[in-house]
Length: 136
Image (cartoon, rainbow, N blue to C red; front, side):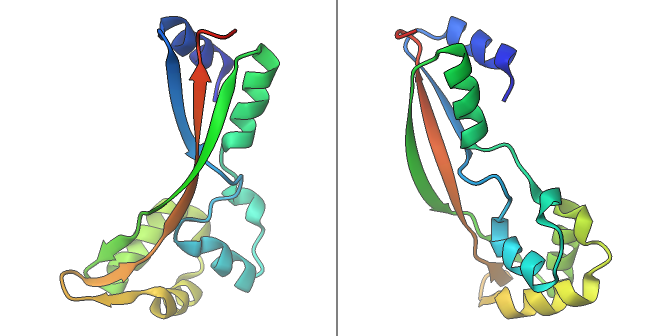
């Protein structure tokens, strides 16, 4: 979240700007933190911009906002365990040298799905920040 981008959006808006960001500073899509902890990995490499970062920025430039927390299911279907491994290698390059451990972990997490083969559940917790551009 960049100061210039926010100011530009606020200046162009009539009433509100809506920003949706993760609620936590550490990625946990697909419960990946379970894997990180189990394998004693450093979670600092999984840092992401979150609602607290945006709130600090908005406070510093004096923009009024409200926060609503939401949860939604964003699971992922897979045709095979190999496809799920490829998915994790792509989205989490930090795990590329952990194929054996990742494969075992995925086998314990994947659910059998009649339409695709497998499904990996993932509930995302997000924050919806509603900026009131009329109150500055």
